[in-house]
Image (cartoon, rainbow, N blue to C red):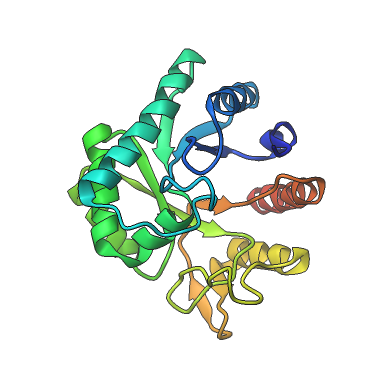
Length: 230
């Protein structure tokens, strides 16, 4: 439903919805074709089974229910990726599941164990917080690796968590997004909602964009990243 063909040339990794919050078999196949054409790394983007709420509502699932939910979605993306000659390389939970695992150790353990059981070669993308080292060590116990992620368009708490979308100012405008990206690139920090500087040792930068304005912004962010490398 978005402009994925315009987004793909500007990104390095694509989080592909698995059908539980968005997407279906045709959308997944088309997205994989786009990723292959643009040499973009592909990851599974599983969520709670909540299509009506776009995966943004927490759900009380048992350990087995969540594990099976994850395995089902990961397998769908991996299987279709193989058909297109692609290899699934990581998993990034979506929406409420992503936020829940960052504040609930039981859910985080379940997610890590589910991935390790499915394939230890898959990496888990998680939010870069002030607990990043502990999360790395926990992942190591399960025999998997993590990708620490920062967000370009979201405001942070002092602990490095994302401010709820229900709070005014939690999603940055264009000026604030570019300023946050520059700060991350320059000294590896973000300014939290209380005005403090928080160090984030991030490996990846998350961007969102399914409209013309969003794609233009992603292009600007990509240009900033390239200029920093050079």
